[in-house]
Image 1 (cartoon, rainbow, N blue to C red):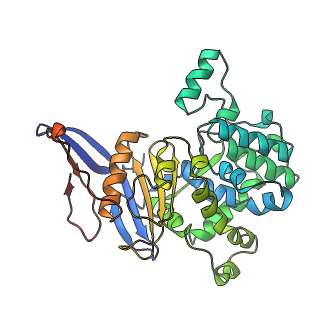
Image 2: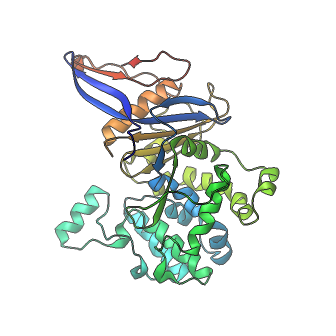
Length: 352
């Protein structure tokens, strides 16, 4: 069994007594690779879950663009999304299915109800069954099905972790992580597609790089089969920044972050991607305080809890100069948050 990489991130005190402690790991790096915050074991190899989706799409994006010219940026945004199965998401999935001539019965992600609560309740009240198309990963699955069809690979076996269609992703990740080994620890994600583990700090480095285009020299140094992917690198940023409501959904924390709801500086490009079981990755373009941009990964030890995640994100953004401190509510004077993470330039403990 692995040793725990977690440490306390913040505590809630009620009338002077600690009532809740939220543990996890936070990795914040700048565009030069400097660690701004490394709370917990940021070298721990973590399952990347849905935070891997931008690179899963990138691994077959050149094939999709060449083979299906009718696909639009919003379709690609759905392919890297963890969507809530709102009507907009399902309409886009129908369009992708039609363009690729792939029936949705070929989807092998688990049948679910929509993540959007109102839609979920409505369908259950109507007596409708869960569907694979409602699964938050159905766009990613459809992307793989289209790419495999274009490459003349059998789609019935698309979940096979040894399949040729996953080799480009492993080669791409090895190059981006400066590894000579294209073999990564592998598991089955919740949607049944293979998922890989690598250090938490590596994921934060990948996210900050989303905001910087690859130079011609960097592309030329890459393996030949990686070069077409790197030429499409700016597309990932464009899909996420143009369509935050597709990448997540109404009220979702990654969508709200990309829409600028949690920051107070105009003109920033912010990308965010939520992953299962308490994972969130963020990329922030250069700020007045950090001229090389920022890559952020937060992992909650106890799994997904949006209240705790939002509390941590707001405090983190405050420390990074992206928002003012929260104004205390006199009615909640008996409650007190103590944060156990800080930037390298700040004191070791920050209270709010």
